[in-house]
Length: 72
Image (tube, rainbow, N blue to C red; front, top):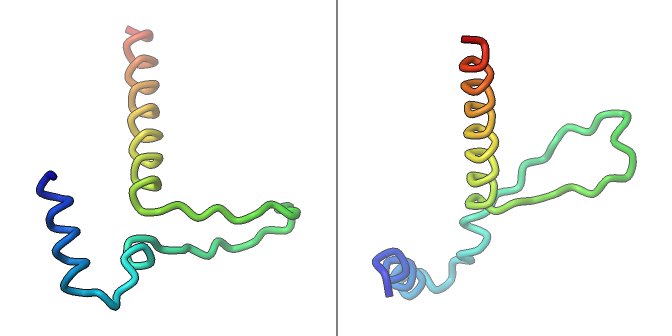
C-alpha cells in the first residue's frame, strides 16, 4: 500500500461520517446558452478534470512550438 492510500484510509477511519466521494468532486453549473439544445451536463471529478486540462494545455503548447519551429 502506498503512502497516498494509507493517508486516505486513515482519513476515512478518522472521519467516518464524511462522504469522501462528495468531498473530492465538485459540480460546476454552467450558464446555459440558447443553442445548447437538450445536451446533458457532464460532471467530472477533480482528477479527471485536471488530466483533461493538462492534456489540452500540453497539446496546445506542442502545436505552438512545432508551428514556430516550422517557420524558422
